[in-house]
Length: 431
Image (cartoon, rainbow, N blue to C red):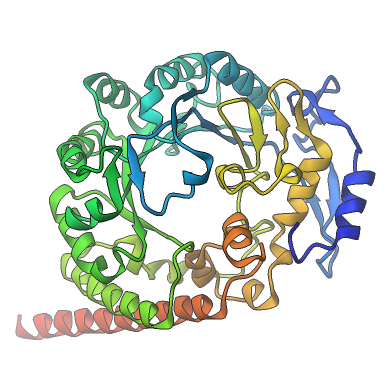
């Protein structure tokens, strides 16, 4: 179990909080409370003992296939095994959807469903069926806001005409997140096909079509680059070449499973600094070097570390329910399985996740850290547990790296702003 949660605490939670009681569709036959909350529980680590109401889930992730057409060298799903025949059935998906929608109160305007794999496009037929089945729900079809209702996490190598047509019809209601490693050589170094061949060739032909979906039809398309030991020395080159090629927004994901050193972090800082200069020259901002959000920073009101088991849950191909896909693939044990689509979600297990996924369980240095830096740090309780042995803390070297990176970029941002101001003043004087 998690190092920071003692056995006596686990025993107390699991035996006293609705022991053995399961929520059939989360709420059983008792229906929803008027305010849409499950119950009240005290935050045991908060000096003010503020009340924490468990809100309904508003996002559900469906792991619709265990199959994938690539073999990424660092993939955390490798231990689970790839099986192209291991696909979620529509019957299982329908049970999950029905359970999900039953617990949505009338005051919730938007919900979202994420399709995950493996490579979810290998089970595109199920994506179509789920969208057709769910679109008429008021939190999806009637939702008119700026947010999305569907998410597809894909490696981008598969995009048929049928997929393109569906996504352009959905427009802003769908968010497509394409995971990449880099440009050409770096992409192929870590991301080979099942047969050990190039994946860049497959990805390249689709990126411009994804750009068309974004620019012409309003689909929310973005790239997520993985920072791993094969790519970190070429972050500047990979980001700039990919952006110049397809003009899609680029986020990033740090592969903690790799064995990082302080020397590696210095290289990442140098590469990020160069990327920041590139962005300033073009008046764009890529996620890796974005510190502009510091202008809106303030006291964090976050009550949870992330959304896992709190605002969202994950259903695997067999209908088992977990707080998130990382809990499932990292195999953290039965204590972190919430239930299944037939019996529903255990109240005791959900309350346990609320305690584990509690912001106040983080070390003091994390709780008091600048919110912008902490968000960049991206504390993941499941990855931390697997890689570092403690769900609620990360190595000091990585912590210091994130702080140094932030303040370096902040200084560069201020210098760029001052230079811009001087140019404007000079231009006015000249006129």
